[in-house]
Image (cartoon, rainbow, N blue to C red; front, side, top):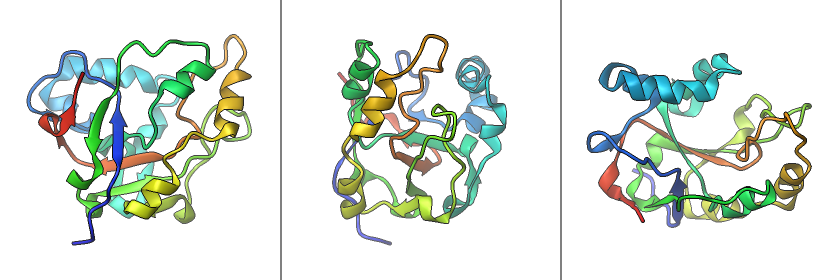
Length: 176
C-alpha cells in the first residue's frame, strides 16, 4: 500500500446525514432515494457528467465522494457570497491512496464548466501532491469575481478535486 498522505481535506457539510457513511451518488439511489433525487439536481444542466470515466480509479463520476484540498471561504468570498456553514474536515491520512486521486481542473472555453480530463490531469494522493494543490489560485478568484448574472455559480470549476471511490465513514470527519 502506498504511503499515506498528510494534509487536511474539506467536504461540504451534510446537514442531516443518514446512516454512518457518506455514499457516492450511485449508491444513494438504492439506499436513500430522496437524498439521491436531491443530489441529482446538481447535474440537471449536464447529466452526462455522471457517466464520465475516472480511469485511474476504474469508475465513473457517480461512484465518487468529492473532497477539496482548499477551504471554500475564499471562493465564496470572491463570488460575493457568505459561507453559511463551516466545511467538514478530514485527515487525508485516513484515505486509501489506491482508492483516491487528485483531479486537476481547468475551466473550459466558456469559463464555467471544466474541460474533459486526460491522463495528465490525475495525480496520486501523496503529501507532496496535496501540498501542491492546497491553495486557491488567483486565476480562480478572478474568474469568480467576473461572473455575470445568469452565469452558473460553480466555485469549484478550476479547483483541484480529491476524488475518492466509494463510501467514507462520517465519523472520520470533524464537524462544527
